[in-house]
Image 1 (cartoon, rainbow, N blue to C red):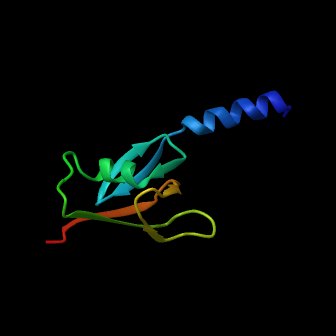
Image 2 (cartoon, rainbow, N blue to C red; image 1 turned 120 degrees about the vertical axis):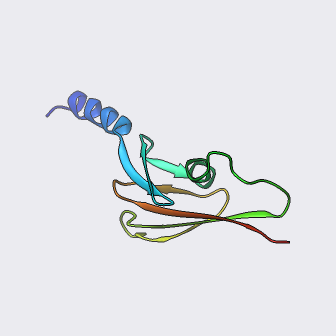
Image 3 (cartoon, rainbow, N blue to C red; image 1 turned 180 degrees about the vertical axis):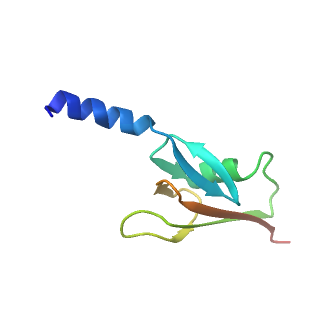
Length: 93
């Protein structure tokens, strides 16, 4: 395989859909990396809002050296097929 073919294949990989599970529901995504905010949008059709609402995002079946963990606002995580996310909203009142 030459470099042009390799780069073309890499470009195709970037758009390849992977299946992840968010709060027990299958979601198809094409991004290689998702942010904290992206995952919340996938978890809730209409996310709760307000000054006292906090979100907790945990994941498992991740890639490489970080197969499980917690995300906080501003962080991102590399996604892989079969990865599982749990998102909860709490009211800190």
